[in-house]
Image 1 (cartoon, rainbow, N blue to C red):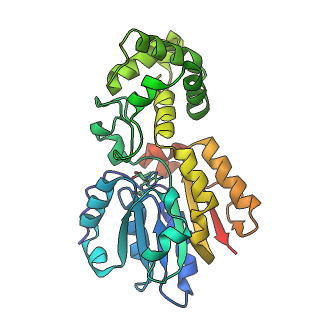
Image 2: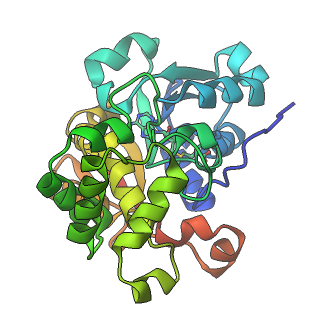
Image 3: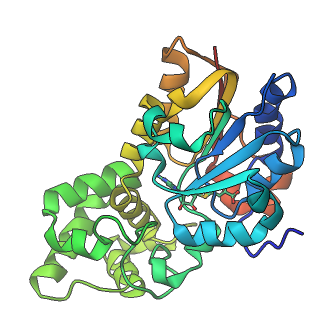
Length: 306
Ligand SMILES: C[S@@+](CC[C@H](N)C(=O)[O-])C[C@H]1O[C@@H](n2cnc3c(N)ncnc32)[C@H](O)[C@@H]1O
């Protein structure tokens, strides 16, 4: 019996399941789908329900808590070995590292649903929400790397402004960086999310504080992407992890940032070992947007290994 404690709603579930299941229908032997961003297990649930029973899913997440919840959500699939759970950063799963986990079976599907889950956003201890008081941490794997606070303690004003501009697309990046560094010089660098959000808010001009989104949204996004090395992880995925896929398997990537979508598009179009199935990225329709506002900026691209 499935007991789901995740609040995360899987995005673009039907097109993803339909596209990734297809190569399995005629597969001559048992194979795997690699769900590189297991999260709440929403897409994995779709795969387990639709895959013929001899095939299975390997769920990967850098957040151990997600995997603990996943074990409880799919006890039978986990006990039978139809679902394996792997605590790792997907950027580390090149073909040599993954091979021992495959039991000699091919990978015929890969999903990467980038970024963070709603479970992580709502967990104050993660420090990724500007609406929940928590430590200014932002790491999705608390065992790795430096916290957002530690990064802000050491970064130069110029580098900080560049990061906020590029990863957050924040047009007031220089003002935000200046105020952060000024607060640091006074020994007042905020240690918590709400205090940091209000500092960022003060850096933008008053009219920009009245917009549709919170004035700290872009800066939080930039720091989260930087602290978790999300673009570097995507680069490794597209250079190496993707080579785990055997023909005629499919890969689907959901991205939430134009820089990410561009990287995925360039790979799917520029590498002759892959054929893009989506001339334009698939986006959520009105019904999905209403049910799940988080799907608003999602862009899905799918390619086949040839
Ligand atoms: C958007 S959520 C995935 C939600 C999932 N598809 C579902 O429907 O429940 C992204 C998940 O991927 C994980 N993640 C992000 N980057 C990762 C990386 N480089 N390696 C491993 N896991 C990662 C996050 O910890 C988070 O749990």
